[in-house]
Image 1 (spheres, helix red, strand yellow):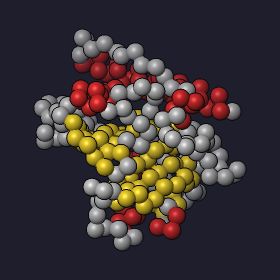
Image 2: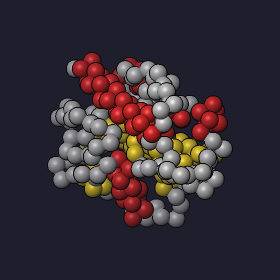
Image 3: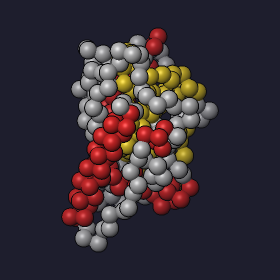
Length: 228
């Protein structure tokens, strides 16, 4: 079963890569599609220390097809970490939850987030809103979606064509992750990049610098600065 899931995820990621790179090649004939190794379930789980082989709440939790560019629905199991504060951030939530038949994602004692029918970027916003409404609104809230249905993901947002999540694969670089997402907005002259992990952000002067100094892992949030 695990091998079958892995093969399906690998095939889906390959299609995503071909579509994205094909669009870039149409715009820029000089662009050369990078040779990127595709993931296996065994290698991607190593990117998250202590991560079990399955995102599964219990024995009744079904295995549901997942597309990082699609929407969440019943049976999708989401691994989430939430941090409060910018400097000296504190982890206030970490768990695996399954979207129920009403499209709600349980968040422990904090409440539930209505994520059914939402893309991952919108789902992250909905989860953050639940924690703010629960009284945690004096400090910044950062939501890291680590994985969905055994697919580790990275968030790309900011000065981009459209905020989205992309699957993690072994040895992925910051530049590759941004390229898969479609890159910066047309005409943008900004170069700065912020990357958040465990609620804390680090700034890089360019994608090249970030790719050289940072090894992405599941749950990272890559924000392209629109100003710097």
